[in-house]
Length: 507
Ligand code: ADP
Ligand code: ZN
Ligand code: MG
Image (cartoon, rainbow, N blue to C red; front, side, top):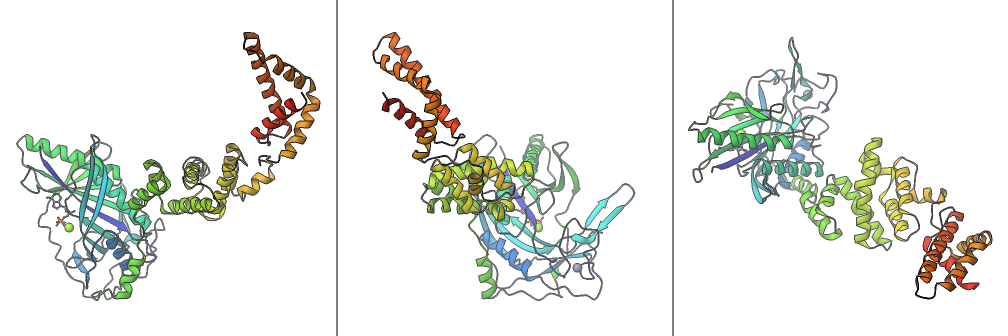
């Protein structure tokens, strides 16, 4: 058996409105080379200036990862030549990155089902600019510099993970965390969150092995698959008496394997030197306070709290916590229901079911975004009011769901919809008695038969048993008539009681 070591380098696009060192708009999917200026195009004689929001967002992530923010942080130039980098250097951080020495606790299950729970140390977080995009066509390579200079935060872990599953969970947790912080959309397919994975194996006690870096892992699943493949490949090579080389490999998602890309590069020399055009950044008390104020309850902690406080299953709590807006909405709705007198656990179960089954289904089918739900279409108080109607038996489960659907389609308050459609369950005994009286007139013969049967059902013989059975079915028939006469709105229990009263009363 070998020991394995995995360290991740995760790049996230920060959701700043403008690029990190110039005033260009930061946007994706626009006409190529429209969001560019002399600064991000690397023209001579221009000066970069730091986007303070990028620094704030970067520091917020760093603090959420329990990193410390140094007294002084600054930028270096990382020299390399590649066409997507028009300056021939990238402004990055090297000697004093904005976040240092943090940690994240991860928790999950390995392939065989064994649980893991461990602390992954964060080596650093640093702010840098993204490169442009190269688009390879058959005839030529095209360059789009809209992405050049976009604010990018790199998060580097120590090699503390051991399996693809651990790395996958790390990415998933990090992804949710940055989304909760509102600093990154976390979309891996679109490249807003990109992970490079470093992995080595060695005999136990021998320390780190020869590092292989895997690129092109654009989903957390590929991170898991790529790493597990690579650990297996390296073990086979060592078993066969081969020596491993330090190299960079690419994940090939069509073949489910890693393939060599380039061998390097212990000594790739980027000739880092301090960026002379940007001042050293010294976070003052106000800046640090604004960073702390931007922190939120961590998604993992929140999920556990929802399980404990609301009695949700782990699976439901996980789904509710998938997006912060949904978790916020869920809690607001349950608290509103509770304030109006409902049992908290009951309201939570009902609302979680609506959100995770009915609403999700409808929203998916109709292409309704989450903010339409949490925003104007169905404010949390209205969902709570609907839960109240159902809990008090004033609407059937089916009609409540129908009202939910119409509210999601933009037709307004579900409580009003229920009233206008006549879906409210009739709870007024006098009204039900009036309806039943009408049925009594129309079904006098059945009432008489039922009454006569009740008399002969008194004994214990088989005849009496048959009479009991028949009396029961006649009663059900009469209750059904009352419900039908009320347009399906009468409370079934009250209708039953009224039929029983009529049968007894006139005997
Ligand atoms: P480099 O100088 O090549 O960029 P770093 O020391 O900055 O290497 O580490 C980059 C990433 O690789 C980090 O996430 C680190 O944890 C991981 N790493 C470094 N050495 C190894 C190794 N031998 N095995 C596995 N991961 C490693
Ligand atoms: Zn620019
Ligand atoms: Mg490095």
